[in-house]
Length: 241
Image 1: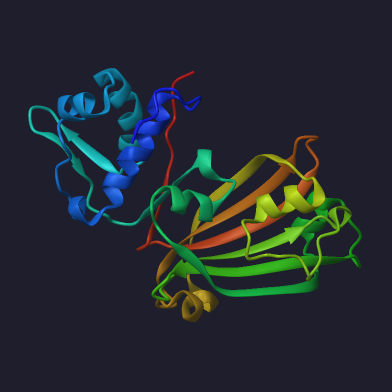
Image 2: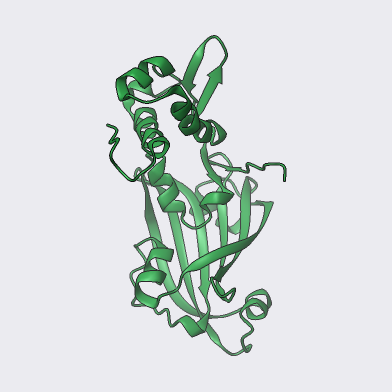
C-alpha cells in the first residue's frame, strides 16, 4: 500500500490509506480502526507519520480518538466541507470516498443583478452566463443546489463541458487558474427551493455566497450554494496566528 521510494510524502500516502479504510464496508458505522502500532509495523513507517496523517482526518470529523480506547470511524451525521476545499465540491467528496452526481444541470444567458454587476464591473444590459447545478447522491437524493455566473471576458459559453469539475474545465480550456475566494455564509429557509432539495419550505438551509478570483486578482465567478442542513456540515479549522 505504501511506496517508500515515491516522491509523494509518506504521510500523504498514509492519509489516502486511511481514507480507503474508512470508506470500506468493514469499518463503516463507527468501527474501531487497527491500532497505530499494528499499522506502523504493517506499513514499515513510524507512529508519528500515522499521527500526521490522521490529524487531518480527525479535524475533518472522519475519525474519533479516545485515549486508552483507540481510534474509531466517526458515525456519519452529514457531509463535511472546509475552507481548504472551496475549489471543488465534487473533488472533495471523491477524496472522502463519497460519490456525488449532477441530478440536474442548466445553462442560460441572464441579466445580472446588482451584486454580480458590481463584482464583475459590467454594464446593466450585459448578458451573463449562468450555470445551475443540483448535486446529490447516486440514489437521487439532493445535497446542494449551486448557481454560478461567469465574467464575460473569459468566454465561457453554453457549449462547454460542465459535467467536468468546473475549475479544471476553466484551466484546461481557458487558461484560468483560480487562486482565492471570499465567502459569506448564513442560514436561510428553503422557500422556493424546497421542492428541488426535497425538503419542507420552512426547513433551514445553509446559504453560501462566493466571490472567486484568478491569480491576477481578477473576478472569475460569482457562485451561490444552498446546502441541505440535514445532509451537510461546513467545518472550519482555525489556527492561532
